[in-house]
Image (cartoon, rainbow, N blue to C red; front, side, top):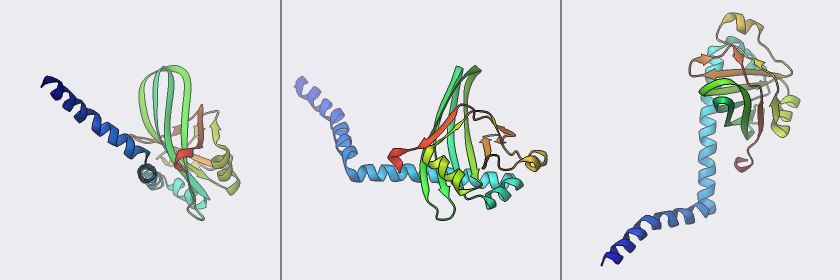
Amino acid sequence: MKKYVVFALMLILIAPAAFAQEEEESPEWKATKKEAKRQKIDETAKEALETVIEKGPKAKELYEQSVGHAVFDNLKIAFGVSGGGGVGVAVKKSDSTRTYMKMGTAGIGFGLGGQKYQIVFLFQDEKTFTSFVENGWQADASAKAAAGTAGANAKTGFINGIAIYQMTEAGLMAQADIAGTKYWKYGKLN
């Protein structure tokens, strides 16, 4: 009798995992999961873009001049060395084409803890936007970004075809430190 109870318990514990594995492999399930990820990225990107435009008058002007934008939701963790990653979407304004992307960052320096933040890129011209999406982009130095103050906004514009804004839970940052960050296409979502 004890053997049957153990066997029944094993079936109860193993069966859901077996069915989940079977469901996971179905094309319909993969498509649904893929669409849910895209939708979550799109919602997060829309909120971040709206916040940047609302909080920075110069950002609204640059957005209106831009050919497209990209928004990334990131998490950076530091314990002497730092690393992080995130996902985002690049959107071409003329036809609303969306390209889902990933980002990763690594560095060495003093630090302990984690930081969740969002990066919003505005692209001045088609060539810069297309290069960012098709070839990816490597941030080699700290990039200046607009802040919620008039002084920072007055000096902010496109630099090499890109305007960059960084937001944390505290709001827009005066300087976006994205050094050592790489952006590339997210193959599974495109």
